Length: 482
Image 1 (cartoon, one colour):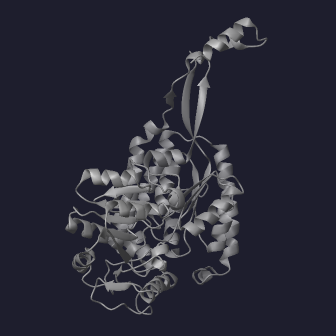
Image 2: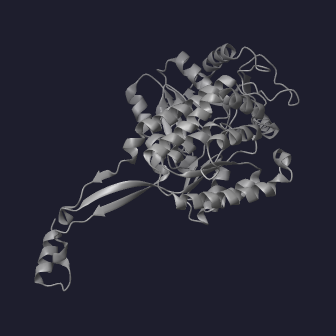
Image 3: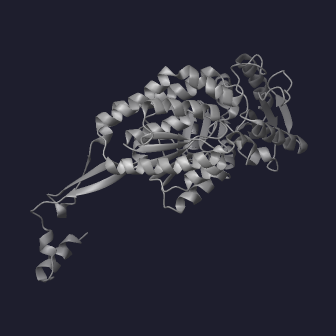
C-alpha cells in the first residue's frame, strides 16, 4: 500500500464492497427508469449548483487542507466559478440539446424521415485527479447528468478531505443510486476502472491513462481520456512582451503549475532569454511578494511530487542547465513548507528529464529559436500537446502556427482560460487524450446518438423486392448512374 493510502487502513475492502454494491444499484435504477425528462435533468443540475454556491467556503477549505495550502481565491475562481458557469450553460441549452435532430433522407427512400435522438448511456464512471478535485469531478458530472445518466465518481487518494466533504454534500442532495463518491487508494481505482461502465471518463497522467484504457478494453467500455503532456508557449518577435510575460507566468503559477494545460516550456526568439528573465522576475515578485507562507501561492500536493520536482532540478543542473530563481526567497526545506518557489531553466537540452517529462510544477524551461518555422518544427517533433499558446500581434503568423501544429486546444495571446469556455469542446489529441467534453460536446459524450428512420407506406423500395426481374434491374441501373 502506498504511503498516501495508509490512512485508509482496513477500510479498503469495505470501500471495494461499497463500490460493487453502488454500481449494481445504479445499473438497476437506470433499468427501472432509463428515461429522464427535461425537468428532472434541470432539477439535478440545479441541485448541483446549489451544492457549490452554498458550500464554497467549506469546499475551498477542504482543498487547501489536502494541498497543505491552496489559495481559496483560486479554488473559487478556477474550480467553483467555472463549475457553476458550466451548469448554467447546460441548463440554458438543455432543451435544444435534447430535441431530436432532423436529418435528410435520400431521394430513393422518401417520403421517409430521419431523426437523431440523444439517449442516456446509463451508468458512467468518472476518475478524478488531485490537481483540481472539484472542477474535474463536477464538470464531467454536469455533462453526465445533463445527458440523463447516473454516475460514480472516484476521487484521488491524494485529496481525502475534499472527497469526504463532497461525498457528504452530494449525499444530502442526491440518492446514491443517482450520484455517489468512491474513496480509497490505487487498488480501489483499479477495481473502479475494471467495472463495465457504460462510459468511463478519466482525467490524469499519460501512464495511468494507458492502464485505464487497457482495463476498459476488457469490457469494451468507451473511454474519454483527458491527459496532459508538454504544452508549449511561443513568444513571437512582435509580441507585446508585458502582456506575454504576465499571461505566461500566471498560467504557469496558478495552482503552482499543477495544471494539465499550464505552459510546460517556452519558445522565444534567440537572444531574448535574459530579457524574459528580467520581466518574469518583476512579474512574479509583483504577484507573490513572498512565497513561503503566502496564502495566495499553492503548495505542491505531497512529498512525493515535491521530491519529483527537486529531482528534475537536480538532473537539469547536473547536465548543464542554469537555474534562475524568480523570487528572492531561498527554497524552503520540505519539513517546513512545500511551496516551491518558481524557477526558470536556461541552457537545457534533450538529455534532461525536464525536457522529456510533463513538469506539473512551477518550473519553466526557456528554449530559444531562430525562426518561427524552427519553433513549429520543435513542437511537431514531439508528442501532440493538450494546449498551445502563441503570443504575437501578426494574425498571419498566428494562423501559420495554428494551421501547422496539432494540439488539443490553443490560445492566442493568452493561457489556460480557453478551458473555461463552455461553448467550445475541450479535449486532447493522441498522447494528450481522446474525446471531448464541455457544453454540447460533453452532453454528446455521455449520450448515444441513435438514428431512427420513420419509413413511409409509400416508397419506391418495393420495386426492388425479389424476384429481381427486368424492372428491378433497370431501376437499380438508373439509381447507380453517376
